[in-house]
Amino acid sequence: MPEEVATPEVARVANANRKYVTADGEKEGGSDAKAQPGKKVYCTSFDSRIGRIYVASTEVGVCKISVPRESRKDFFEWLKGHFDPDSVSDNRAHNREAIDQLVRYFNGKLAKFTCPIDLLGTPFQVRVWKELCKIPYGSTVTYKSLARRVHAPKSFKAVRRANVANPLPIVVPCHRILGSNGALVSYSCGIKTKEFLLRLEGAIIV
Image 1 (cartoon, one colour):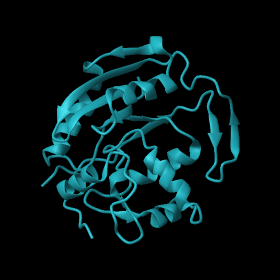
Image 2 (cartoon, rainbow, N blue to C red; image 1 turned 135 degrees about the vertical axis):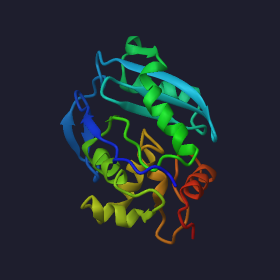
Image 3 (spheres, rainbow, N blue to C red; image 1 turned 180 degrees about the horizontal axis):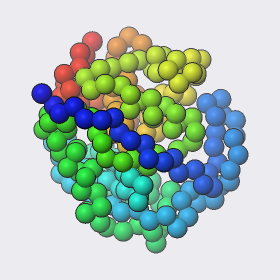
């Protein structure tokens, strides 16, 4: 059985100089400036059971994971959109904890992640992502159910968009969300990967 450990600790939500948008598309303030001016980010990659995965972390925690459907170019484009180019460096040691936990997860030895994470998104997105972290290993919920959990029952489409925008797939388990009829839908990493992850966890696939 996978090891049961604590739910991921969301150490901090970085929100300086961001332009935020609510679920209804209204601006919440902030600016169009670079999201994380001067903030250091450390990146690396490793080979997993689903292919090459790219990982980036700040001093706060893991901020970006790109699984195989996202290319190396996509990964660095995301970093470029969130950090100053000069602040990005190659550093495997800084990502060792996240990589070790991902490897244990893929080997069926880890049910919940404990590596610190640094969620970079709008307040609404972060609210959705934090709720995703509460879905137990091997379980699934629907978009409508998730929308109710974040107190936005009429905004399940916005919840779906936040789910797709999740920068930390697997660690923040957006793969555990299904369509209202139990279908494997809207997974940015690809439906085959979503099915693989749910089968790995022993979730019931309708």
